[in-house]
Length: 118
Image 1 (tube, rainbow, N blue to C red):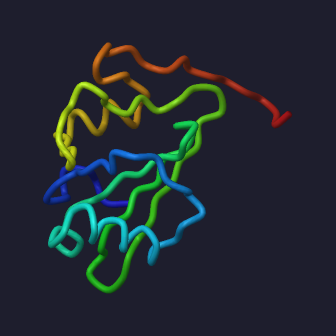
Image 2: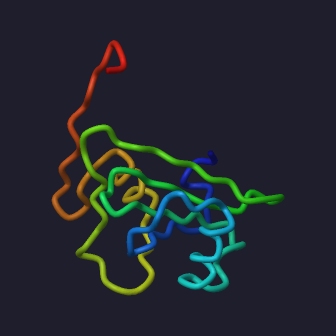
């Protein structure tokens, strides 16, 4: 994935979605929620209802690219204190979100260390 600072904007889809959606389903959601920003060089973040997974979609010059991460124990803290239909984050805020910070409380997820998969 490109570095977050290389995108023209970082947007969050406010409502949780079914993350089984692929690039076509996600691009339709972006088109409806964000209009003309789909091919603008921006990246769009989505989460599931339980907030345990995050999917990001962007146009990569010749097609859509998707990046996904899933948390084992914690949840992504979607910013509730930000208002409006379209939520735009700064690069710093997006990095905090990916690191597990609650943007309203500035508290990160616990670090987990494993040696074997259960």
